[in-house]
Length: 401
Image 1 (tube, rainbow, N blue to C red):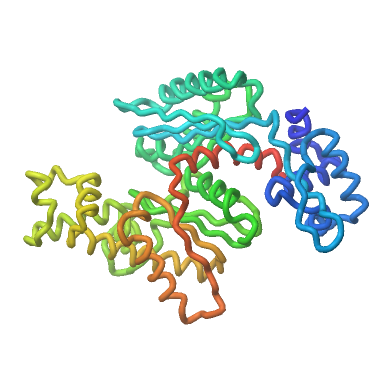
Image 2 (image 1 turned 180 degrees about the vertical axis):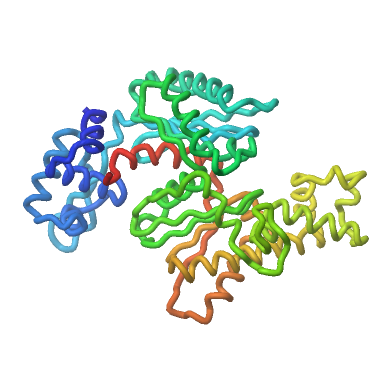
């Protein structure tokens, strides 16, 4: 029943079906929610809304088991989606650790598998291995691939790992899409990790109180994704790293993209490593000299270990990176007027990185007191990308095409 109705939502142009889809999408994104609020958000007459809600209830797509706070009379009924029989799989592909999650429509994780790779694998070999793991996970929950609403897969890390030129992304994505759909009998969605992570972070924590949501991550690359008025419009996978090429200094260092002064040259992990090595060559003291025998041994793990030891040289490099990262985010806020900014990625939880980033943003925005942007660190969940990948599957059934 759920499969049939969701496919109708995706394909039918019938006016009644479209109204049912609108209500279901609102309940999915805002539930538990009152009928009066739904009627207002959907611009429907209360009687029409009540009739359609009754139909969704009879189809068991929504439930009315929760009661809201009373304002003096009877407690109002709150509508929620019915997660029963709706299963999603999300996958984050990575050549270090890949993550697979099985979840319901509320994005509650029902089962999870982490896959570590010892050797470099082709994307196709990785997919074969991951799909076998998916089958095993489903068997543990007495499910089959056919019972899934779909599988969402974050593939941008693999495309970047293979150093694929951006103009070849579309052809390669189509190639991988055909490879997967030949093997699985359900809906498949391919996308970027930043879009999926932003969706999950927003849906799970900020959907009720943010109209302009900006999610950013700072790692080896720097990425961002914006969600406006609860509208998800994921950018093409090839533009996932675009935020890292925001210009910070027109007279700055040359970037791999050909421009000068890109944010990536100031705030990424590689920029921090480069800055530390330069200072070490100048004879600056650091605990790193005790952790390695040669400059070539310096990697991100060594730097992270030095940070846990509060190494002054590494802390200075980290804080400088955070300062410029904050400046770039503040510039994005001035353009998007974001009411919530969430900073994620490997660097955010390190030492004072988030605190310096936040101060940098707030100092830049202080001359505009009417901009009251709230700034938070991302939830430290390593499953957030896979959760978003699965969750975005259900959104694709509900988009207005």
